[in-house]
Length: 244
Image (cartoon, rainbow, N blue to C red; front, top):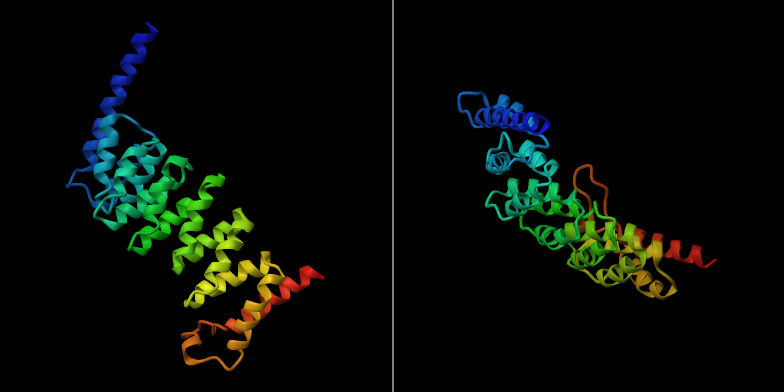
């Protein structure tokens, strides 16, 4: 009797989900209202539901909800497949949700996505990597950090929080970058974790940028001017303070 009741309950639930799925793609329903049936599918993992949610990723009105539904249903495969979408918004949403699983077998895919040419995809993928606490993520963050640029600098900052020693090694190499943000991020790490061996290079940077800021180094609008000399001096002071 108990088994029969469970079977009947499953039938009724499947029928209810089928009705919800039909509403999901009903063109007669206003776009804003089609998100409601999407939210009703939270946590549902029936194959038909997962297939519909995967399809819904391509709909801008359903993308965010569908991606969240897939995560809550632990539907990793559809989200992994979404990383290969031609739509950058789909790739970005998939990267964001995949990071929440913190599974080591997803590190490679997220690291690749963090190098996406689209900034939204790359930053979402890095945000996904930043959710990891396992040391397994550190080599991936280090590889991204060595490339410099916005994503690399953000990766270095996260690596610094997880493994200061590894971040120091990366920062020392990045200090020679021609990009001012790379140098600033690296000096921040070196000031926090470096030692006397870093002082000569920091002093050279401080001396080279001691003069009045050039037009190239000035800020834009309300942005503060970038002063590498000041950053180098702050790193020097931090190192010397620890030595005392």
